Image (cartoon, rainbow over all chains, first blue to last red; front, side, top):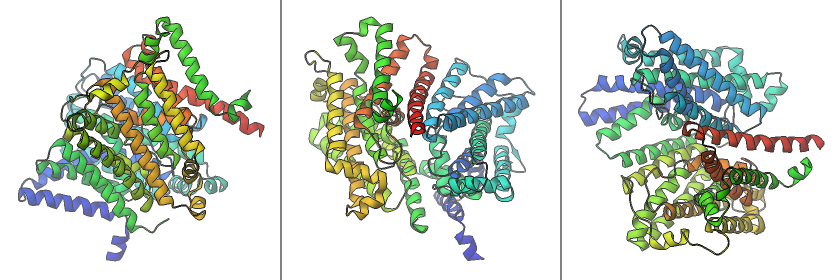
Length: 313
Length: 311
């Protein structure tokens, strides 16, 4: 039993998260444990949602990565808040707009990759510049507050768990079910393991890739919609930090960067860990520069540790 | 005609630059002077150096997402240590190049994904830069300032520098034996290794070269801006990757072109000036740069695909 648990790649990110939590607690002599856990779940949820999307793309195999996540988050947050215009009872409309932004962005990303045969890195990078421009254009001089009900939901809790974390958990369960229990999930994993073999086996690989790029953009949009509601408005740099975070949580969570293997629970462990590391460095009272440096070194350290554990390819 | 383009990959980047330059001169005839050209391409010099640095990494099938943060850090070191205590400054810069080589060793030795390691390193560089220079400031060492503002006869400094960078890297990467082997690492690392070359050391060399050109980019940038801040060159990450690809390079297989990379960097720098001459609303400038990038890559695709069909 213990052996099978240890062999799971996701267990390490959870151990790391628990260890970091314990270190913060040791520093504060156990005060504020529930507050810290609550904050970790709230902020971790955003990282987990974008991380899940990025995980699906990375699962598609080498070279597949979505660098437009920050821009899509910002655009979705901006446009949905603008549409809602702080009016009550418009939360559903806002969500609809956000999802529509996600679908549009995902489709155009994939169009660039498929029709123009651009490498995904370049395609999503250039497209993200265009999305960013859209966001700047529509965000001009506006600072719209989210509708009160939506803001309350985004910052509120149900049975002690932050609502945004519940949304994230819901999405994770869907992703897990699709990956593990549906044909589509198997197609996705097979395409990531060997694209040529998957194509020859009759899997509609281009459809799988299109669906994946749309999914990651929709997840980014949903995260952007809730993040804008959570923080009381959209900002042009709101997605910035999620570029590194989305990739880091996937790798720390034990998903293979070479593709073909996904790991949903690991993304959550890694998301909590990423937040807790920053809080730990904060509570040691370190300056912003040192904090950034240590965050980078910890990420690299974990990637190195993970690579020495797995057998060399 | 299309075969000509496919055979000489350099033609398309040259043509893109020429068209963009013609359009800029058409929009703003006054730019067609010694002073105007210098102004148009001034900021292209550090971008070209950063692009060459990125090319060294792409040459061995990796990608560097930390380059912008690295160039910013170098700029901060240049504006502080290199200005106040030149010996210490040079030592720090040499240490940074060594750190890049170590990064290459680590990535190869542990078989790590370069994209993740360099993303992590971008935090390390950024944190260091912020520690050195918490608020914008510092000043450029006078000799760099005078080097970057030198006025050679007939041709502006920016053009001379671009030609020089292209020529030196072309000889280094395309003409010399070691350059060929380095490109071979990107093409087929296993066969290079079987042929008796130490791939680990070659990768370290490629990364060290990237660090070296990254340092040059940061120093050149401070020579132009006269001061630095921790975020001064963050957009270089994106520009350098785009420049390499615009110049006809590819992400895999060691297919890179130093001359193309420099031309790609010039094109990107010119695109920014061109867009401001268009009187385009600042809201759309970033987006238009993305659109130009997509456009040029589409043009390349049309030519290369036609060639494949013709056999």
